[in-house]
Image 1 (tube, rainbow, N blue to C red):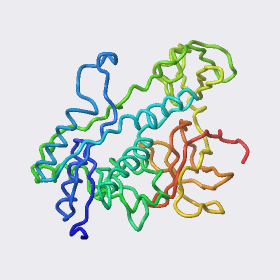
Image 2: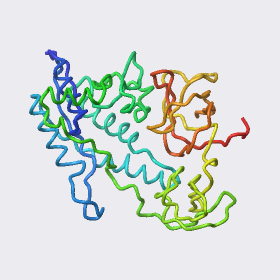
Image 3: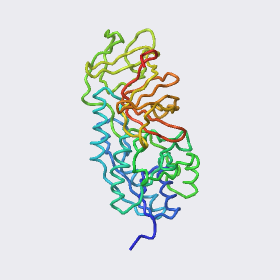
Image 4: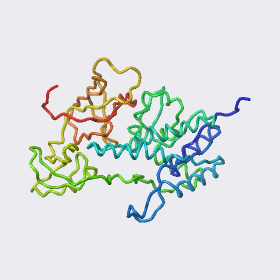
Length: 352
């Protein structure tokens, strides 16, 4: 016998955004199953942080309380093994290669819209509902209404993916203030809960080795405590007194070196990236678009082309601190066309 109502799985992190998303799905008439992904268990003693609950008991309790308040079942989905392999280990492997990883993209790709989506299908669900600030319009992944909270950058791997037909973002057309107001109006127990900005696993690599800090000419000017503690564009904590501000302009894992330079040495006019995802067929000719190189980066006008399976973006105005390992995401208007992982950038005046 066919089901009478559409069934969805609501990813419930215990926060206000995912809670409102689940409640909205319920209000719109779907049969909703709440699910909390447990991805990491913090070792608070070894981390040296003040004791708190992390990625676990408190958030599960909050999600369960919201599920009870809106009258839906709640399940816990164990994603710890997948998280360690696909996110934590991948991030540390990237660090060992002198890259600055983006765990949030990996977590969305492999956990929330990988493992959890597979789990939802086994429950007979038609879609996964999350509290991400993004929109899906006409089959395209688009920016959220609230520009300050927009998370489409972290979701770029879905841009050309059939999974979009199985995903819903109920709060993508709302502002954060509207989401909070909705939570209060609905009487959700997490309406006043603060947002967590913590990384859910330690980023420093225990295998780090001290090494040399060098200038752009290769002269040794100091020592560093491990490559994973540095990223392109960093100024504080470089540990070198030179009488002027110096910035990390490159990491050289082959020589275990941190390279410092002046701020102008961080400017690039071309960004090169691998191509991970593209909506439809990649363009055969250069296109006018906008690119983002980090979450809090305002999209920059660029001429984008696909070359040898990668993305090359020539920007109108030089970009600062283009960081290998982060994502280059290509937009046209509200829509994400595609994106990939940044390989590097070229300085102004270099050949085309």
